[in-house]
Amino acid sequence: MSDILLEERPLDGVALLRLNRPEVFNALNLDLRRALAEAFRRLDADPSVRVVLLAGGPRAFCAGADLNEYVDATPIDLLERRHDLLWGAIAACKKPVIAAVRGHALGGGCELALHADLILAGRGARFGQPEIKVGIMPGGGATQRLTRALGKFGAMKMLLLGEPIDADTALQCGLVAEVLDDDAAEPRALALAQQLCELPAVALRLIKESVLMAMETPLSAGLEFERSAFQNAFASPDKHEGMRARLDKRPANFSRPPKRR
Image 1 (cartoon, rainbow, N blue to C red):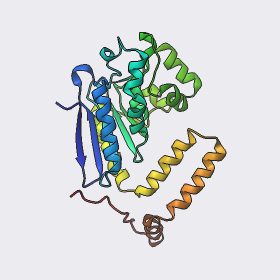
Image 2 (image 1 turned 60 degrees about the vertical axis):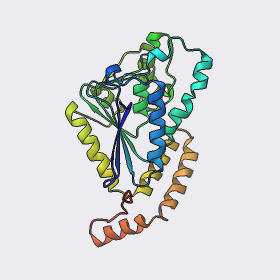
Image 3 (image 1 turned 30 degrees about the horizontal axis):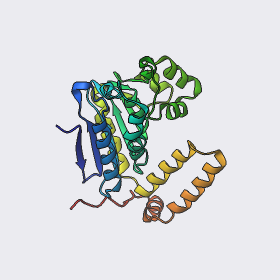
Image 4 (image 1 turned 90 degrees about the vertical axis):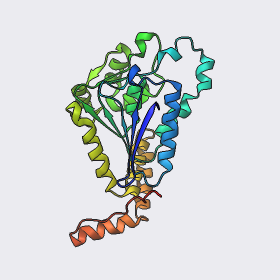
């Protein structure tokens, strides 16, 4: 069976990527990493896809790296695997990405969720970076993204101790957007994805780019980027439709993704 199950909904513009290694709690081996990167590259280039939804299984979103591929690995082995390119394909996605997390999201699994723009968690979800307990440290961005999400001290506690946090704690510290019953997490994520598909794609992309820029630049540079993005939004037909609809007191009819041939 494939390491990823892809369910595409071309009529509403949502693509659901489901990690499919349940026997190892969706642990990330090199094949799965490559499949994820390829899927994100393709979906990002597909105009019929507006939103990408990431999901795992009921017991685990992703339990982290497959240690069988790391226990005897050398620094040269890691260099040749080019994990930077594989993570980069996910980070470079211009479209909104939603992660629906149930069960374990540990190590690389937590880092995978951190690549999303919205994280929805089931009540049984657990987020953690346990790398310290096997003698290493995170390598998929947790020291950077987790610190930006939680602040220095919250991130330090998770990273240095390696202890997971539950869904309610993740909500309180701003790591996740919503916490729901486990069986409601994916339906809610899908509903949000479909809601995003009804909104103007250009504006969604510009908002995502501007927020990500805020994580990487000083305030002055971020404000300059935002001003430029704001001006670019005025080139979209959806700008005229949205404002005219508001003035006419009617629902806006934004452009829809093209139907797949």
